[in-house]
Image (cartoon, rainbow, N blue to C red; front, side, top):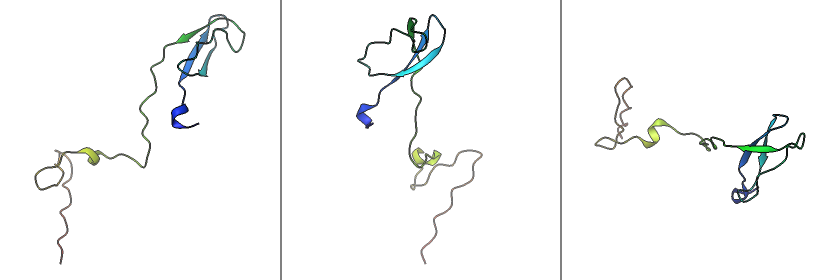
Length: 89
């Protein structure tokens, strides 16, 4: 599945057997009408949506910190001082 083909997950609850299940559907698809377990009527539940997903090697607190004068990161109270740049010999 490519990025453009990802489909949202919808949660349903059966009004007859009370089971909950998920279904992958296009946003343009009609909601399901019948339970996949007992064929009873279902209602689509309103979800909180997808959480924020970070992908990649990682994110660090220093990635987006504002820099103080001189191009060095600001030091917050209670943290260690940034290392001084090594002098060229």
